[in-house]
Image (cartoon, rainbow, N blue to C red; front, side, top):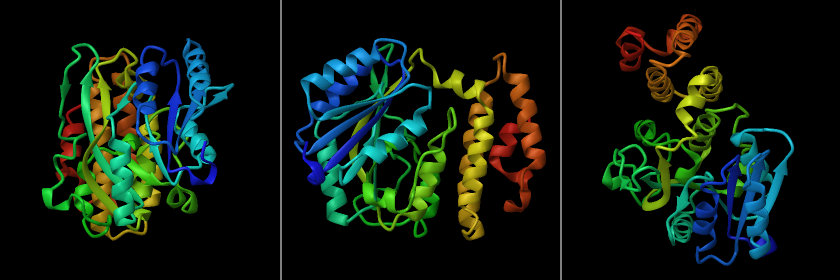
Amino acid sequence: MGGNNMKISVIIPICNSEKYLPQCLDSVLCQNIDDMEIICVDDCSSDSSPDILEAYSKKDSRLTVIRSGTNLHAGVCRNIGLEKAKGEYVLFLDADDMLFKGAPEKLVKTAERYNADIVRCRAEDFDDVTGQSSISPHNSLKKVPPFLFDRAISYKSLYPVFSKICVAPWGGLFKRSFLIDNKIRFNSLVCVNDRSFFWESVLKAGTIVFSKVFLVHYRTNINTSLVGRRIKNFSCHFKSYELVYKASGALPPKMRRSILDAEMFDMAHWLEQSAGTEYFAQTVEMMSEFLNNMDKTVWNNIGRCVWYKRIAPL
């Protein structure tokens, strides 16, 4: 590997991903970037994922495998990969997703052109059952006005648009020195371990660029359901909210409210998803307690909030 001249590091947290891992790795290794490294952090997998990783690492020296003896969850695994990374830029990819051919190279060129700390880009949904691809407004930046693409912006100059885009770490390219120098890391929660990372990164970034490039095939409708994990560990939403609440404390009221509205919309969505499950009653009780204790001074009238109107009937 290219030592200090590494252009890009692709960091992949892996936990029992044997079904999708080969496709994921193939999509990365086929990229036309010689000065690229792939850092796979195996989170205590009990399936054949470790064997797959070992086989791939023997075939391609760009791939490094780090193994954890205990289950650390995706956020901590990404942090481990980031500490190991040498690339000028960093991509985070999930083990069940795939990269578009040529996309990372295009994003690096965009980042270099604008000297960007972050380049946010598009993703295409891929249904694992039907094999069909589709474009969702949330993952494809359809809610971003066309004139905002391919230009240097910052959060504070155009803050409302950031509440309308996907916060997933696979939705962007990051300058590694920006993340390291600002000590930006993922939280250690079982799930919801990326939302605080998103907000901290966009708040601290000097230059952000929205790109029309599609980077990731985002796999949907899979058996290892995020829905079940999020509902089972719903308290992670509250802990994530508190992290974002603290990180946004110094912002002007309108900016802070925009961020916290987005967090509560996400929470309302997952609360609705829990309806009909064995966890629903407990989740509603937890949400009620959270609302009773939360700082409501952020909103002039919480009863008017759209997210509150979604939660209240439940």
